[in-house]
Length: 351
Image (cartoon, rainbow, N blue to C red; front, side):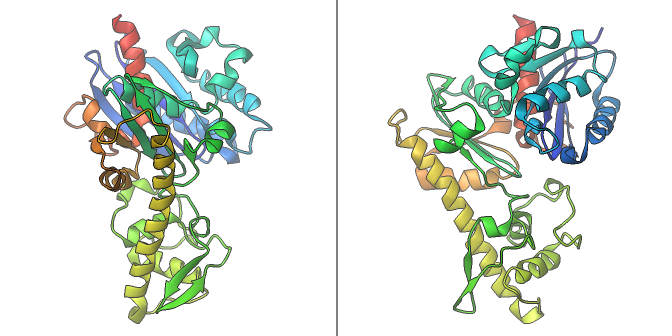
């Protein structure tokens, strides 16, 4: 029987997984695109790929999820139920634990419908709990491809005001903006082109992945989906898509204009996230000068936020021990929830 653990984060657009060895070191980190809204067959295909790449002789598994939100399912309850049913076709029930928020990791054989509300979209809490165990107080900010989580940590514990997505959106702990999949039209309805206001069209012509390709900040592996026009995912292709947001075509003379617009849109998204951080800091539970732990593929923005807020920046990856070649494909901090549930299960086994 293997001492290895595999942590899974089953999202609506990606499945992320990490392997942890008998010493608690992360050995492998992988991410696969998974259009779950198109059917469970995509989950089955990804599960087979991940198990072929990460599994050895019968490892233990820990799972968290947010994929129950996709419109394949009539509601979140049904989503959790069907995702767990699908994953058990690939993993023995007695080798699988599910993260259920306040209830911690629950063996799948003990999971019933009473746990579904706690399991649904609890991946943010897994990441924040792991970060909290390493720092005394601060903010945990996970800026992903689609959403941003902002959690308060004090006395080495997560101190959330909400739990469901609805509650967390209300209290600013969930900001529905990310650095890859968010449409540009969700960031601003106007930019400035050649010193004139320019309204943006309400069409999915470009995403924030295009913006951050133009600014040169987006890791190449971060955008695993086709571009909005199925075109080239390079700076010129991104500028062409951004030009369409203004009802224009791209020409060589206006390249500096699109760079300036990308910088402006970046500042607008950063302001949205900064507002969420300030909302949490306004609760008077944290002292200025405390920590900000950054996670997610967009954590390059978290570094800027820490500077602006006067907080000490800590990268999530620095909190995780890993083998030399673990991050050759994907960075640990980009897969924080999968890392967290694997490490939480490892700690349980060591007790």
